[in-house]
Amino acid sequence: MFNAETILALEQSARSQGSEIQPTSLVGVWRLKQTWTRDGNRPSPGTDPLLRSLGAQFSLSSSDDGWEIVNQVVLGALQLRFEGPARLSGSRPLLVFHFHTVKLMLGGITLLNRSIPEPPRQRQPFFALIATTADGQWLTARGRGGGLALWMKSALPSQ
Image 1 (cartoon, rainbow, N blue to C red):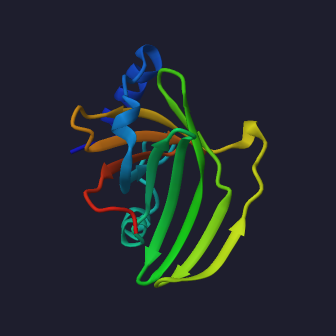
Image 2 (cartoon, one colour; image 1 turned 120 degrees about the vertical axis):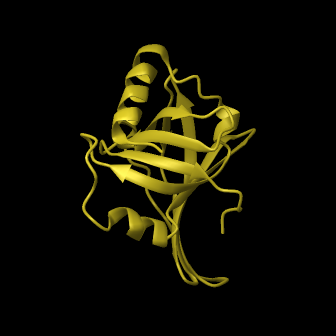
């Protein structure tokens, strides 16, 4: 399907010409499919299966107030969830965000609900969005730490 070479070529194109990603195509739940290191190598064995088994995902929604991002992992009935605002900038674009809340839930019971201080603007996490298909079913991005990721859009709502 996708390999690091393909994604690196798409990234070069996005850097020089922009990605042409439409903001409306980003709305939804994105489940992690595969990762690569900064150089496009496979991560340590077991990393991708572990992240997929934990249901690693992020979701984006937009409103009149801007964008909202949720990152979460789930292990059975246990859910670790980070929530906060996001913004898109540039033609590539960058999805810059920070989390203002962390929640730990067991079933429907909230065990932890804490505020997180906002990091300085230059330290905020981001995804440099590389490419997506016209039907919006996959998304490639490079994170602030340099790793590459392939995300598949989920038909299921965020838990």
